[in-house]
Length: 234
Length: 251
Image 1 (cartoon, rainbow over the protein chains, first blue to last red):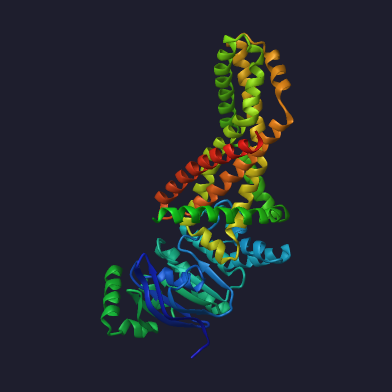
Image 2: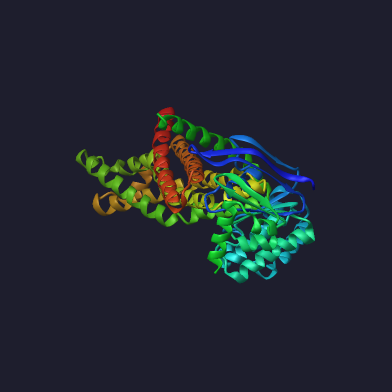
């Protein structure tokens, strides 16, 4: 058992009386790619928001190790009036006192890691959806993030761009040892990239297994989700 | 039952945002990024509102001159037309006109921009990066409105007086030069300073209200539209109420 960097203990979160998370418990270990699967509206994104403190649980506990956390939003969430370079440099410029040369080095390195060095001077509106996500990812890792949270990283992207994002998640995990928590409903991507997959249904963890065991899992909810996902693929 | 506490909560939030923004004003000047944002906001607040402000203030001066001039003419007191127009503009109407234009042009844009950022997760992204949205977004906007509103109000006053002078010369047989000398004779320092202070207060209120309404946006494009609408309405109300209170305090 590796070191736990994120742990949810019996977390309950209600919105307008409806329990979005209903006793959710799981733990993420350092260095793994942990995927949270589930149909829309089952509390996947809310789970990520609890990790970064944007949401507080009504009851239960969320424990996160003292680590630098990056977050890739579904939309990229880039600042519209800043160029890609300025967006990536933003957390360094605003929250550190690093010299300009060091900021330039880190931004250049992050942009190179996501393959956007040539688009540094462009504004978000001039980028495709995939490029916006890659710029968002560069911003998430520019402070040498130890944990990166991905909210639907491949939704709305074509298969080629999805493959690029998928490769980036794996590369960052292998080359920088980044712990990744990926929220998605893309089972195929989860199976290829993850150390473990957790299925959420009705705010609870139904199964949390390595990909090969997850695909063979006999639980009804898992079999239904896997069957539905395979049906969509064909 | 729920409306009253929400109203109080909104005022409390606006107050906190305002105090925090004022605390961040020095950082806007000290950070190169902040200075760049401030200049962008000064341009949006001052230069881009000039066409609307020019038209509104000229016509306001013309209407004032026409209505007051017709009454003064009944008592053969047209000589005082310039003074009446200038006094009204300096004390009330220039700041009011500036505030309304700021709310309609700048406040609505701020609420729409912040609201769109909110629904697109950009505000959450700032928080996760450790950047306070009030420092990054509210402080430069409120500071720009604080600095630019008095300038725009003074410009309103000049344009309104010119508009009044044109109506006086063309329709009420008041010589333009006589109109201007009457206007300048009556203008007092106190009127100028109170008018300018009023404009500065209106600018700050518009920035604060618009930012807070933008931050309250939810549910996509519809939510942003509603936030923008609320920002303009609440700004108008804030301008009217605070305008009366300032006038009551000084006159």
